[in-house]
Length: 116
Image 1 (cartoon, rainbow, N blue to C red):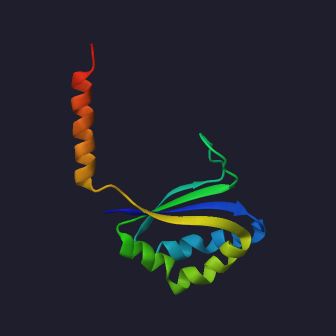
Image 2 (image 1 turned 30 degrees about the horizontal axis):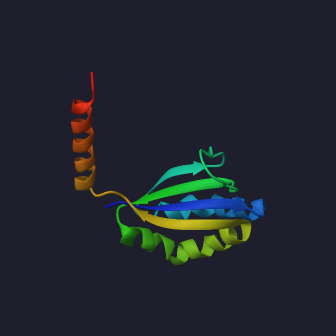
Image 3 (image 1 turned 90 degrees about the horizontal axis):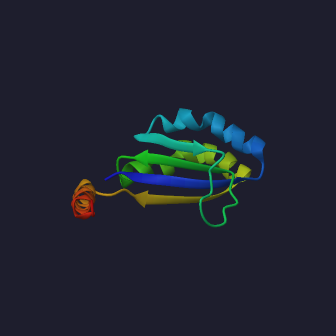
């Protein structure tokens, strides 16, 4: 099951964050992950949000995500990220394929029950 690392960032020293970002892909490409989102203008739909950037990384499983997160290579560049931005970083689990199949089946059934 895929897992996602979601980071919400508030820049404090942009030059340090930019230095981190300049080295990020050199490190990230060594791991089994995909960058899905790196948005410096997220649109807030609900609730307070005082962050400057949202990043979403996808990994094949929790072990791959933790291998990246805890790697010495990432730790080395993360010093600049931590000095350059306040962050909330989460790891969340994706839905199992069978769960998605159930949701699709329920949605299909609901469509047949709708008044025409």
